[in-house]
Image 1: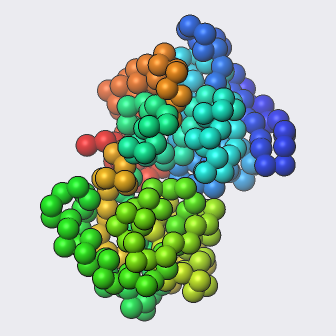
Image 2: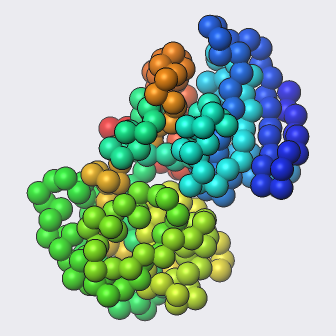
Image 3: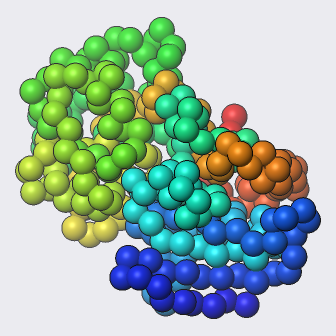
Length: 277
């Protein structure tokens, strides 16, 4: 059953009761960013939906755990996990070396690269690498990165607060200033309003947000990037002390991969196979 409980002005809980789990994990609080479609968002009734929500519900149903979704801002996900406010965090969360020092991750169950977005007619519309997918650790990425550095020097890049794009800009675009805003829509609005020159989002968040009529005059440019600070794949964030919970998620991800559940959900929410390669 679904139970909607209002707690604080910035927080809601939605509980799905499906029985008891093995070991001590009879219930879980799952932290999500509810403004990050198609990974996690709210439907017209105010209930959470998206790829990560359906994935979580699958894990909870199969393991007979009572799961509760807790709405958080993206930059509060990991702090809330570390302090024990939630037990698991999701929302297209990529595994990175920096995050891996703070929390543990399940095995990866999806992937999502990063893209640049500009308004039509922007002088940055010819950004290097158009139509290509590059891994930042590969030698072939170097000339493309150098092209980005040259063209974005002195420009302002808008991106979502506390995401990997911020780390990317600090490492690879040191001559570019960074504007951090809360949601993907805010990121694109910053470019539309000319408070930033170019935007950087995950590919799926960009595609989803660009469907909004207000951003119909914007487009993706340059190469699609992954690797290094941009991450190694999407996974569930878990406290390092909860190795048994990580094992539960790893086992369920393996099962969902083997029986086609992850592929089915990926096609439903993304229209593409985003399973790890």
